Image (cartoon, rainbow, N blue to C red; front, side, top):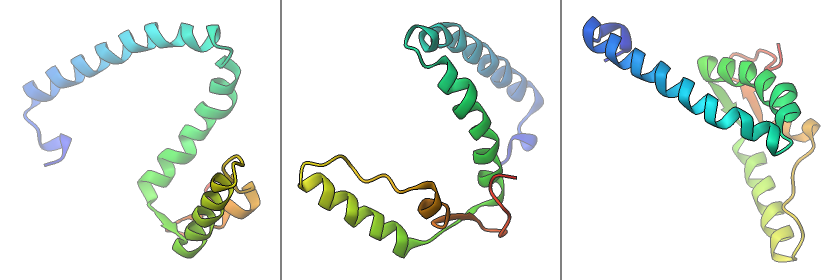
Length: 107
């Protein structure tokens, strides 16, 4: 069942509660972003990325399993040698996750 099929009275109660909890959490957590020095990261990286992630969720994604397995093996090797986990460059990782539609994920 999708949300548009839910009884209006039940949907109304759920929606109001959801909005209230979201407001309470934002009032609690947003000051912590500033206190922890993460406000710029949130504003400049996390929020713009939200649009990309939402579009990917709506369109679906195609994952290159072989490349993902290669990344995983490299991470395991680096961790076993006491190195930091391997984080692929944006150029390499961009070919591992592409929208199922073939559309540029950053548009």
